[in-house]
Image (tube, rainbow, N blue to C red; front, top):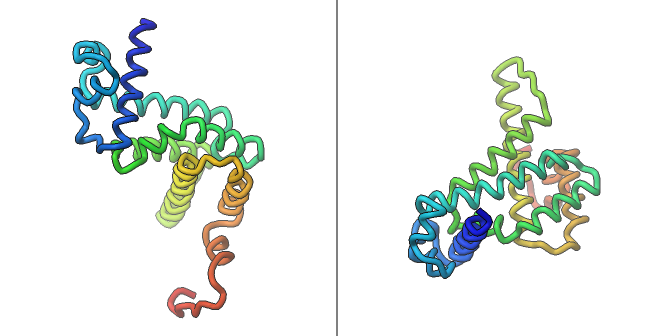
Length: 198
């Protein structure tokens, strides 16, 4: 079993390496066995096909993300938790960056977004009374989930520890002050405003 786990990890690494240079749709089992220096029969002992392999890579990351989320909470604004989030994304930067790239499987982004949406639902036990409440809640949840997705991708692409403090400040501003306030704060005061947007 230990050897099979090692082989699986090698094939997962091969998939991530290939995704840096070609789209998932164009990757073949031959590419994977060549990259991992294994043979086809070894591949098929571990995975049914390339879809099974990419799903395994994604499942492994999502499982780690879920453990992290439950331990630290992705909306915890304490400095230690924010630093832990940064470190988590930095530790998994290659996987995140590769799976979220244009070459990755588009289903991964949806799966990660669903996990973030679950975290939003768990954080806010919403009691919506009418359709307007539902619309407002969905808009707010979508905006917050999008901000978290952006942050995860940003850290994975820019894993510089000097960015921790500015990132913390921006996340706090976003969550505590809201989207409109941040856009107002960074908008050009000299630019003439469109009267329709006031």
